[in-house]
Image (cartoon, rainbow, N blue to C red; front, side):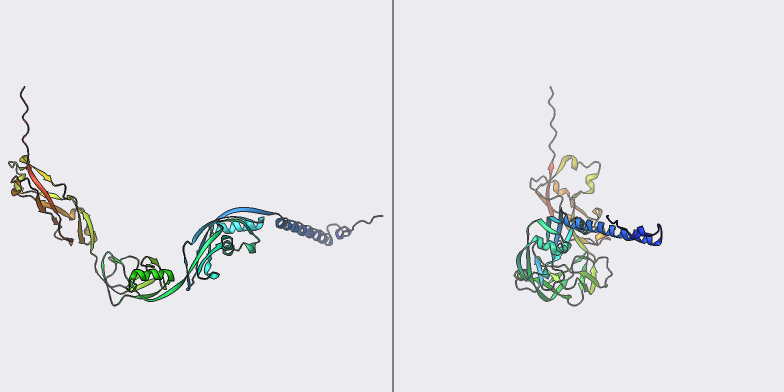
Amino acid sequence: MTAMYDSPESRAAPFSRRWWLGKLHSAFWVALATLLIWIYADMEFTDEVKLKADLFLNTGESKTVALLGETRFELSFTLSGSKTALLQFRHDLTARGSVLSYDVSQEYAPGEALVPAATLLDKAIGLTRRGITIKDIQPEAIPVKLDRLVLVSDVPVDLDAQGATFQPTGEAPKVELRVAESRWKIIQERLKGQPPRLKTQPVDVKQRPAEKPIVAEIYPMLEGQPVLPTQKTVTFQGKVLSSRVAEDVPVTIKLLCPAAWAEANNTTWQDYVFVPNTVSNWRPKLRVEGEPTEFKPENIQAYIELTDDDKKGTAAWLTRDVIVSFPPESTLRLVGAAPKVQFRLEKRKPAATPAIP
Protein backbone atom coordinates (compact mmCIF):
# COMPACT_ATOMS: atom_id res chain seq x y z
CA MET A 1 0.00 0.00 0.00
CA THR A 2 1.36 3.34 -1.04
CA ALA A 3 1.80 5.96 1.66
CA MET A 4 0.42 9.40 0.91
CA TYR A 5 2.42 12.61 1.55
CA ASP A 6 1.21 14.34 4.64
CA SER A 7 1.94 18.12 4.45
CA PRO A 8 2.18 20.25 7.61
CA GLU A 9 -0.96 22.18 6.76
CA SER A 10 -2.93 18.93 6.18
CA ARG A 11 -2.24 17.85 9.77
CA ALA A 12 -3.23 21.27 11.16
CA ALA A 13 -6.71 22.45 11.79
CA PRO A 14 -7.97 24.55 8.87
CA PHE A 15 -7.32 28.31 9.22
CA SER A 16 -5.28 27.84 12.35
CA ARG A 17 -1.94 29.62 12.82
CA ARG A 18 -0.03 26.42 11.94
CA TRP A 19 -2.20 25.95 8.88
CA TRP A 20 -1.44 29.51 7.61
CA LEU A 21 2.32 29.13 8.26
CA GLY A 22 2.30 25.92 6.23
CA LYS A 23 0.59 27.68 3.35
CA LEU A 24 3.17 30.54 3.39
CA HIS A 25 6.03 28.01 3.53
CA SER A 26 4.77 26.27 0.42
CA ALA A 27 4.16 29.57 -1.43
CA PHE A 28 7.71 30.75 -0.65
CA TRP A 29 9.29 27.70 -2.28
CA VAL A 30 7.03 27.96 -5.32
CA ALA A 31 7.96 31.65 -5.79
CA LEU A 32 11.68 30.92 -5.36
CA ALA A 33 11.53 28.12 -7.93
CA THR A 34 9.69 30.40 -10.36
CA LEU A 35 12.29 33.17 -9.89
CA LEU A 36 15.16 30.77 -10.49
CA ILE A 37 13.48 29.52 -13.66
CA TRP A 38 13.16 33.10 -15.00
CA ILE A 39 16.78 33.90 -14.12
CA TYR A 40 17.96 30.76 -15.83
CA ALA A 41 15.86 31.54 -18.90
CA ASP A 42 17.27 35.07 -19.08
CA MET A 43 20.84 33.75 -18.83
CA GLU A 44 20.24 30.88 -21.19
CA PHE A 45 18.50 32.78 -23.95
CA THR A 46 20.53 35.70 -25.33
CA ASP A 47 19.44 38.51 -27.60
CA GLU A 48 21.07 40.97 -30.01
CA VAL A 49 20.64 44.70 -30.49
CA LYS A 50 22.07 47.19 -33.01
CA LEU A 51 22.96 50.64 -31.66
CA LYS A 52 24.87 53.82 -32.52
CA ALA A 53 26.88 56.17 -30.33
CA ASP A 54 29.33 59.08 -30.60
CA LEU A 55 32.63 58.35 -28.88
CA PHE A 56 34.69 61.38 -27.83
CA LEU A 57 38.33 60.80 -26.93
CA ASN A 58 40.12 63.17 -24.55
CA THR A 59 43.09 63.41 -22.21
CA GLY A 60 41.17 64.55 -19.14
CA GLU A 61 43.28 66.83 -16.95
CA SER A 62 46.59 65.36 -18.09
CA LYS A 63 49.54 67.74 -17.88
CA THR A 64 51.89 65.47 -19.80
CA VAL A 65 50.17 64.50 -23.07
CA ALA A 66 47.88 66.07 -25.66
CA LEU A 67 45.55 64.34 -28.11
CA LEU A 68 46.11 65.24 -31.76
CA GLY A 69 43.85 64.58 -34.75
CA GLU A 70 40.20 63.59 -34.65
CA THR A 71 38.51 63.32 -31.27
CA ARG A 72 34.93 62.36 -32.28
CA PHE A 73 34.02 59.00 -33.83
CA GLU A 74 30.56 57.73 -34.77
CA LEU A 75 30.27 54.06 -33.90
CA SER A 76 27.71 51.52 -35.17
CA PHE A 77 27.75 48.23 -33.27
CA THR A 78 25.87 45.01 -32.61
CA LEU A 79 25.77 43.70 -29.04
CA SER A 80 24.91 40.27 -27.69
CA GLY A 81 23.80 39.41 -24.17
CA SER A 82 20.87 38.66 -21.92
CA LYS A 83 17.70 40.62 -22.51
CA THR A 84 17.96 42.23 -19.09
CA ALA A 85 21.56 43.35 -19.62
CA LEU A 86 20.83 44.72 -23.10
CA LEU A 87 17.73 46.55 -21.87
CA GLN A 88 19.69 48.16 -19.03
CA PHE A 89 22.53 49.12 -21.39
CA ARG A 90 20.12 50.71 -23.88
CA HIS A 91 18.57 52.68 -20.99
CA ASP A 92 22.01 53.91 -19.82
CA LEU A 93 23.08 54.85 -23.36
CA THR A 94 19.88 56.82 -23.96
CA ALA A 95 20.36 58.66 -20.66
CA ARG A 96 23.77 59.80 -21.94
CA GLY A 97 22.28 61.03 -25.20
CA SER A 98 24.19 58.28 -27.05
CA VAL A 99 27.41 60.17 -26.25
CA LEU A 100 30.37 58.39 -24.66
CA SER A 101 33.79 59.71 -23.66
CA TYR A 102 37.06 58.09 -22.75
CA ASP A 103 40.33 59.48 -21.38
CA VAL A 104 42.99 57.83 -23.53
CA SER A 105 45.82 59.22 -21.38
CA GLN A 106 44.97 56.57 -18.75
CA GLU A 107 46.41 53.68 -20.76
CA TYR A 108 48.20 55.00 -23.84
CA ALA A 109 51.66 56.57 -24.10
CA PRO A 110 52.85 59.29 -26.52
CA GLY A 111 52.93 58.06 -30.10
CA GLU A 112 50.51 56.76 -32.70
CA ALA A 113 48.38 53.63 -32.34
CA LEU A 114 45.48 52.01 -34.17
CA VAL A 115 43.24 50.84 -31.33
CA PRO A 116 40.34 48.38 -31.83
CA ALA A 117 37.09 50.34 -31.54
CA ALA A 118 35.61 47.50 -29.48
CA THR A 119 38.32 48.03 -26.85
CA LEU A 120 37.60 51.75 -26.57
CA LEU A 121 33.84 51.19 -26.45
CA ASP A 122 34.24 48.64 -23.67
CA LYS A 123 36.50 50.96 -21.67
CA ALA A 124 34.11 53.88 -22.14
CA ILE A 125 31.00 52.16 -20.73
CA GLY A 126 32.09 48.76 -19.34
CA LEU A 127 30.40 46.16 -21.53
CA THR A 128 32.40 43.20 -20.18
CA ARG A 129 31.29 43.69 -16.58
CA ARG A 130 27.70 43.87 -17.84
CA GLY A 131 28.04 40.44 -19.44
CA ILE A 132 27.66 41.94 -22.95
CA THR A 133 29.82 41.04 -25.94
CA ILE A 134 30.43 43.03 -29.14
CA LYS A 135 29.60 40.95 -32.20
CA ASP A 136 30.29 43.67 -34.79
CA ILE A 137 31.47 47.29 -34.75
CA GLN A 138 32.19 49.93 -37.37
CA PRO A 139 34.73 51.36 -37.75
CA GLU A 140 36.78 48.44 -36.55
CA ALA A 141 39.77 50.53 -35.41
CA ILE A 142 40.36 54.13 -34.28
CA PRO A 143 43.63 56.08 -34.65
CA VAL A 144 44.93 57.49 -31.38
CA LYS A 145 47.79 59.99 -31.57
CA LEU A 146 49.27 61.38 -28.37
CA ASP A 147 52.02 63.98 -28.13
CA ARG A 148 54.10 65.18 -25.18
CA LEU A 149 53.17 68.55 -23.68
CA VAL A 150 55.80 71.29 -23.47
CA LEU A 151 55.57 73.90 -20.67
CA VAL A 152 56.24 77.49 -21.80
CA SER A 153 56.59 80.12 -19.08
CA ASP A 154 56.22 83.91 -18.91
CA VAL A 155 54.12 84.42 -22.05
CA PRO A 156 52.68 88.00 -22.19
CA VAL A 157 48.98 88.46 -22.90
CA ASP A 158 47.70 91.53 -24.79
CA LEU A 159 44.15 92.85 -24.41
CA ASP A 160 42.14 92.80 -27.64
CA ALA A 161 40.22 96.01 -26.91
CA GLN A 162 37.26 96.82 -29.15
CA GLY A 163 35.28 100.03 -29.47
CA ALA A 164 37.78 102.29 -27.72
CA THR A 165 41.46 102.89 -27.06
CA PHE A 166 42.71 101.22 -23.89
CA GLN A 167 45.99 102.30 -22.30
CA PRO A 168 47.36 99.57 -19.98
CA THR A 169 49.30 100.40 -16.86
CA GLY A 170 52.67 98.67 -16.52
CA GLU A 171 53.66 95.46 -18.28
CA ALA A 172 51.28 92.98 -19.83
CA PRO A 173 50.24 90.09 -17.56
CA LYS A 174 52.17 86.84 -18.13
CA VAL A 175 50.98 83.24 -17.99
CA GLU A 176 52.25 79.72 -18.42
CA LEU A 177 50.94 77.51 -21.18
CA ARG A 178 51.23 73.91 -22.29
CA VAL A 179 51.39 72.97 -25.94
CA ALA A 180 51.97 69.75 -27.87
CA GLU A 181 55.64 69.32 -28.75
CA SER A 182 54.97 69.09 -32.51
CA ARG A 183 52.80 72.22 -32.42
CA TRP A 184 55.42 74.14 -30.43
CA LYS A 185 57.92 73.49 -33.23
CA ILE A 186 55.48 74.98 -35.75
CA ILE A 187 54.92 78.02 -33.51
CA GLN A 188 58.66 78.63 -33.16
CA GLU A 189 59.12 78.46 -36.94
CA ARG A 190 56.37 81.02 -37.48
CA LEU A 191 57.68 83.34 -34.74
CA LYS A 192 61.09 83.49 -36.48
CA GLY A 193 62.94 84.21 -33.27
CA GLN A 194 60.36 86.61 -31.78
CA PRO A 195 59.02 85.86 -28.27
CA PRO A 196 55.49 84.41 -28.16
CA ARG A 197 52.56 86.65 -27.15
CA LEU A 198 48.98 85.62 -26.49
CA LYS A 199 45.84 87.71 -26.99
CA THR A 200 42.55 87.79 -25.16
CA GLN A 201 39.14 87.24 -26.63
CA PRO A 202 37.77 90.56 -28.03
CA VAL A 203 36.51 92.84 -25.24
CA ASP A 204 34.21 95.82 -25.87
CA VAL A 205 35.65 98.48 -23.55
CA LYS A 206 33.76 101.58 -24.71
CA GLN A 207 31.00 101.16 -22.11
CA ARG A 208 33.34 100.33 -19.21
CA PRO A 209 34.28 102.73 -16.42
CA ALA A 210 37.43 104.59 -17.40
CA GLU A 211 39.79 103.09 -14.79
CA LYS A 212 38.07 99.87 -13.67
CA PRO A 213 40.25 96.70 -14.01
CA ILE A 214 39.31 94.53 -16.97
CA VAL A 215 39.14 90.74 -16.60
CA ALA A 216 39.44 89.07 -20.00
CA GLU A 217 39.42 85.46 -21.20
CA ILE A 218 42.60 84.24 -22.90
CA TYR A 219 42.27 83.22 -26.56
CA PRO A 220 43.89 79.73 -26.56
CA MET A 221 45.61 80.02 -29.94
CA LEU A 222 49.17 80.98 -30.78
CA GLU A 223 50.31 81.42 -34.38
CA GLY A 224 47.31 79.41 -35.52
CA GLN A 225 48.04 76.49 -33.15
CA PRO A 226 45.89 75.51 -30.13
CA VAL A 227 47.55 75.90 -26.74
CA LEU A 228 46.53 75.24 -23.12
CA PRO A 229 47.06 78.27 -20.83
CA THR A 230 47.32 77.25 -17.19
CA GLN A 231 44.69 79.90 -16.35
CA LYS A 232 41.58 80.99 -18.24
CA THR A 233 41.57 84.73 -17.53
CA VAL A 234 43.94 87.63 -16.91
CA THR A 235 43.36 91.08 -15.38
CA PHE A 236 44.42 94.37 -16.96
CA GLN A 237 44.94 97.65 -15.16
CA GLY A 238 44.68 100.85 -17.16
CA LYS A 239 42.18 103.34 -18.51
CA VAL A 240 39.91 103.80 -21.49
CA LEU A 241 41.21 106.82 -23.40
CA SER A 242 38.53 107.14 -26.04
CA SER A 243 35.51 105.37 -27.44
CA ARG A 244 36.18 106.65 -30.96
CA VAL A 245 36.06 104.08 -33.72
CA ALA A 246 36.81 104.16 -37.45
CA GLU A 247 34.37 102.87 -40.05
CA ASP A 248 34.12 102.74 -43.85
CA VAL A 249 30.96 104.69 -44.67
CA PRO A 250 29.42 104.57 -48.18
CA VAL A 251 28.31 108.00 -49.50
CA THR A 252 26.81 109.43 -52.69
CA ILE A 253 28.61 112.51 -54.03
CA LYS A 254 26.17 115.37 -54.59
CA LEU A 255 26.42 118.65 -56.55
CA LEU A 256 26.54 122.13 -54.96
CA CYS A 257 25.67 124.75 -57.56
CA PRO A 258 25.95 128.54 -57.37
CA ALA A 259 22.76 130.07 -55.96
CA ALA A 260 22.24 132.08 -59.15
CA TRP A 261 21.73 128.89 -61.16
CA ALA A 262 18.49 128.30 -59.29
CA GLU A 263 16.98 131.70 -60.22
CA ALA A 264 14.02 131.73 -62.57
CA ASN A 265 15.77 133.67 -65.34
CA ASN A 266 18.98 131.56 -65.21
CA THR A 267 19.29 129.17 -68.19
CA THR A 268 22.32 127.16 -67.04
CA TRP A 269 20.51 123.83 -66.81
CA GLN A 270 18.63 124.59 -70.03
CA ASP A 271 21.91 125.15 -71.88
CA TYR A 272 24.17 122.57 -70.18
CA VAL A 273 24.05 118.96 -69.05
CA PHE A 274 26.19 117.51 -66.26
CA VAL A 275 28.29 114.54 -67.49
CA PRO A 276 30.16 112.50 -64.81
CA ASN A 277 33.24 110.54 -65.86
CA THR A 278 32.35 106.88 -65.30
CA VAL A 279 35.98 106.20 -64.42
CA SER A 280 35.45 108.14 -61.19
CA ASN A 281 33.77 106.53 -58.18
CA TRP A 282 30.68 108.59 -57.40
CA ARG A 283 29.64 106.28 -54.53
CA PRO A 284 32.92 105.86 -52.60
CA LYS A 285 33.46 104.53 -49.08
CA LEU A 286 34.97 107.14 -46.80
CA ARG A 287 37.04 106.22 -43.77
CA VAL A 288 35.47 108.20 -40.92
CA GLU A 289 36.45 108.29 -37.25
CA GLY A 290 34.24 109.31 -34.36
CA GLU A 291 31.86 108.29 -31.62
CA PRO A 292 29.77 105.21 -32.62
CA THR A 293 26.47 107.01 -31.95
CA GLU A 294 27.30 109.71 -34.52
CA PHE A 295 27.57 107.38 -37.52
CA LYS A 296 24.29 108.39 -39.15
CA PRO A 297 23.79 109.01 -42.91
CA GLU A 298 22.59 112.59 -42.33
CA ASN A 299 25.79 113.41 -40.41
CA ILE A 300 28.13 112.58 -43.29
CA GLN A 301 27.75 114.65 -46.49
CA ALA A 302 29.99 114.53 -49.57
CA TYR A 303 29.72 116.94 -52.53
CA ILE A 304 31.61 118.93 -55.17
CA GLU A 305 31.18 122.63 -55.91
CA LEU A 306 30.34 123.74 -59.44
CA THR A 307 31.33 127.21 -60.68
CA ASP A 308 30.57 129.41 -63.68
CA ASP A 309 34.03 128.60 -65.04
CA ASP A 310 32.88 125.01 -65.55
CA LYS A 311 30.70 126.27 -68.45
CA LYS A 312 33.58 127.35 -70.63
CA GLY A 313 32.93 124.58 -73.10
CA THR A 314 36.11 122.50 -72.89
CA ALA A 315 36.05 118.86 -73.99
CA ALA A 316 38.58 117.93 -71.29
CA TRP A 317 37.47 116.34 -68.03
CA LEU A 318 37.47 118.66 -65.02
CA THR A 319 38.95 117.25 -61.77
CA ARG A 320 37.43 118.34 -58.50
CA ASP A 321 38.13 117.49 -54.84
CA VAL A 322 35.20 116.02 -52.96
CA ILE A 323 34.21 118.09 -49.94
CA VAL A 324 33.25 116.02 -46.89
CA SER A 325 31.29 117.85 -44.20
CA PHE A 326 30.02 116.97 -40.74
CA PRO A 327 27.69 118.83 -38.34
CA PRO A 328 29.49 121.56 -36.36
CA GLU A 329 28.81 119.84 -33.02
CA SER A 330 29.97 116.45 -34.28
CA THR A 331 33.26 114.76 -33.36
CA LEU A 332 33.43 112.96 -36.71
CA ARG A 333 36.46 113.47 -38.92
CA LEU A 334 37.70 112.12 -42.22
CA VAL A 335 40.63 109.72 -42.07
CA GLY A 336 43.01 110.27 -44.99
CA ALA A 337 42.59 112.46 -48.06
CA ALA A 338 39.24 113.19 -49.68
CA PRO A 339 38.65 111.51 -53.04
CA LYS A 340 38.69 113.28 -56.40
CA VAL A 341 36.19 112.94 -59.25
CA GLN A 342 36.05 114.04 -62.88
CA PHE A 343 33.17 115.62 -64.81
CA ARG A 344 32.32 118.26 -67.41
CA LEU A 345 29.39 120.46 -68.40
CA GLU A 346 28.45 119.85 -72.02
CA LYS A 347 26.38 122.19 -74.17
CA ARG A 348 23.00 120.75 -74.94
CA LYS A 349 22.46 120.13 -78.61
CA PRO A 350 19.62 122.15 -80.11
CA ALA A 351 16.49 120.15 -80.74
CA ALA A 352 16.05 119.18 -84.36
CA THR A 353 13.41 121.21 -86.22
CA PRO A 354 10.80 118.93 -87.73
CA ALA A 355 10.65 119.07 -91.53
CA ILE A 356 7.63 120.84 -93.07
CA PRO A 357 5.87 118.56 -95.51
